Length: 309
Image (cartoon, rainbow, N blue to C red; front, side):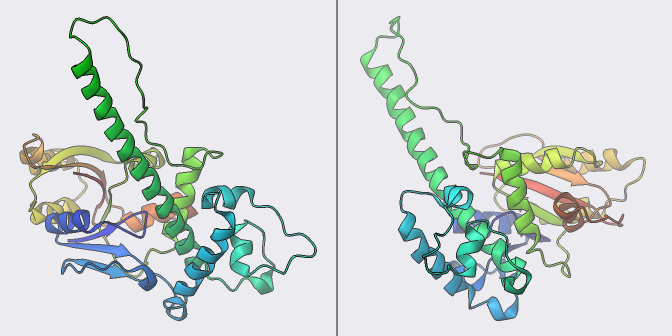
């Protein structure tokens, strides 16, 4: 079954391999310039950029890195929002720098395809997300140490109250932007890269914030949500059966019958939340969410899945 990862350009090797084992094939939209070093037979990369930009994108990233060194005290997100305008005597900045500053471009200057600007934005967003996840893991370590110290230093009956040192609520949107607006920007950028001519009946993510944003966006579309648990090798036939179920009056009983063996958690299983969208293509749903494009009913169903280790 063909499965497409969203809404970022990169996925770590362990997670990519685990997903591929459960689904058969995993496709990731990744520009050639940032292809990972690992090679897994069932994990395939699609470069979403126009042909003339596949190699040139490397130079775009190099230009940004050089530029960002001037602003070492600012994250790229802060820069996107708050970078100052050029002074009159400053050398004219490049098109890329102007794009990063959020300035409007004249028609004759718009020679950066939307796929390139979208890929750049997602690359930077993913870099920022990874930094935040790293901080989050360190905070978890501090939390464990704090709990250990409490158990060692204090008697079980002690009434001394030690306040929590850390808060483990993960939130990596721009500090000046509503989370929903921020995730919508990420979704919209990723939607620009979807290969329209190829069909992927399953869209999968390991980002819970992205998954929750998708669920909110689907509030006006008929859908069903299931929690299931899969062993490492999964059951690839399950996905084909779910995609092929005709949406009739007894649809829900068919779905429950297919999924009932996977409802109970067990040791070493992967927890998946499955959003079942009957008679709609995931690509069309994503384009409807981000670009208000019309959806057409189809014979096959679409699945959006949250992957959790």
